[in-house]
Image 1 (cartoon, rainbow, N blue to C red):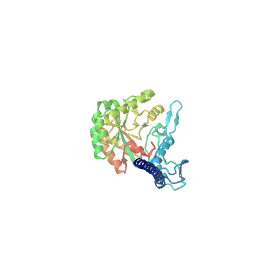
Image 2 (cartoon, one colour):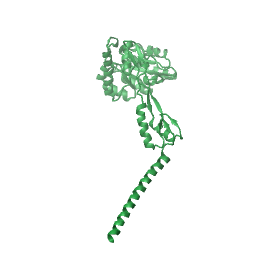
Image 3 (cartoon, rainbow, N blue to C red):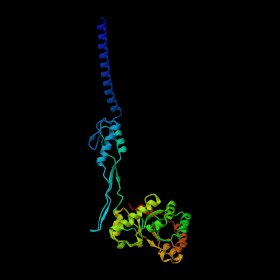
Image 4 (cartoon, rainbow, N blue to C red):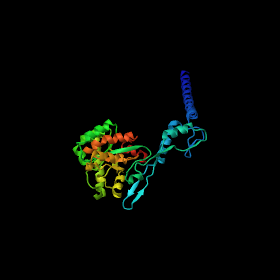
Amino acid sequence: MKLVILERKKITWFFCWVLLVVISAVAVTQWSVLQRRWYGVKDGVMLEGRSMARLLPGEVRTIVTEMAKIYALAPQNAGYFVETGEVIPEKDGRGVDVEATVAAILAAEPGARLNLITYAIPATVSKEYFAPVFQGPTDQKRASLTINVAWGEAELPAMLKILQERGVIATFFFDGAWVKKFPEFVKEIHAAGHEVANHGLYHGHPAQMSRDELRRLIVENNQLLGTVIGTEPAKLFAPPYGEFNDRIVAVAGNLGYRTIMWTIDTIDWQRPAPEVIVRRVVDKIKPGAIILMHPTVPTVQALDRIIQTLQGQGYSLVTVSTLLDGIRP
């Protein structure tokens, strides 16, 4: 009799356990359904033709992330072919704003038809890179002081002092051979907030160089400057001797550099009287001007008067990169 009672208890417990499992499974299923009803995407919502109805936020994010990989496009830089003289224009890329897209899906009304939220990724090298820059945008009273440094270390401290006192940031184009001799000067100039740019690995004649030599002239000096200042120098190239042609500009452009010339040449390397240097700048100044200088004694003597005069006329003196902000990079 006891054995029969025990067996009945076992059977009862077994059926209770099965019932509990069934009830739990139904509860889980119903909870999942309720979750999707309360927190999931509303019925009929489509993304790029794909149903998103009743999906939970985590599932939506996973799907959008995968779709973003398919829809994204890398930008294509402009290129110049010396053999044909042809400039291939740049093409912007496309990225997908995953979080914004997910938020839009979760907030969408029933039946909404949505697309991925995208944004443009600009190319880093545009067709403008394949033309030398003589001047910046003219819509603001801004100008740049550029100082080419392949010699003149004795005059640099005085120039830096004047620039600091007048609150002016200049762009210094450094010759690599000079940088190797005076790396501490370069560090000091960079630490003072001035823009560090490329004047070539050595002061040779670019017009006489092959494309490989030109690449080396730019790339190796960029590496040298980067090592000295601990960061990437500005992608600006002032060719030695101011020499440029299609080949020089093309090599620089294909490396991602703007070829920087000048609007006003002080011709201070001839060491004229300071008054001559002042007049050359003041008489020719205009919005967007790039003013070429070198570290010479008369330049130092003229610099403060130049800055005061231009600032008195309402000009802001900025780096070349800042000056060119109005030109699409």
